[in-house]
Image (cartoon, rainbow, N blue to C red; front, top):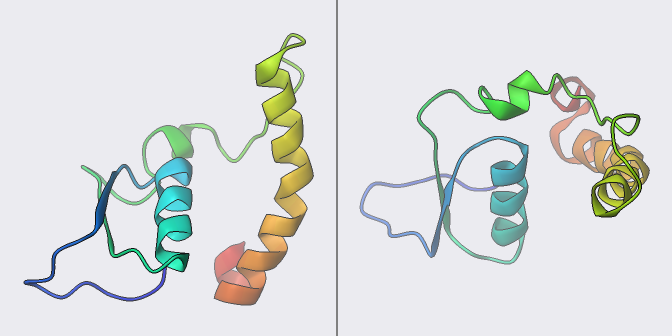
Length: 94
């Protein structure tokens, strides 16, 4: 993520959860200039995101919105990985 937190500052937004969804929300807000505080009871991406093992499952989805979202995620993944490699470096993006 961009920036750092200084004691005494007040966030514009608070994101609860540091998994893939929370991190994506925080990143999108931060890129728009919003000061974000991310809270999690454990380590970054250590709960549901860690349990998913990085898999984007399509085979277990019946036709409908959930399958459409899974397919959109699969299409988006290569571009997102390229963006992360550019921003974070290849080693951290992996």
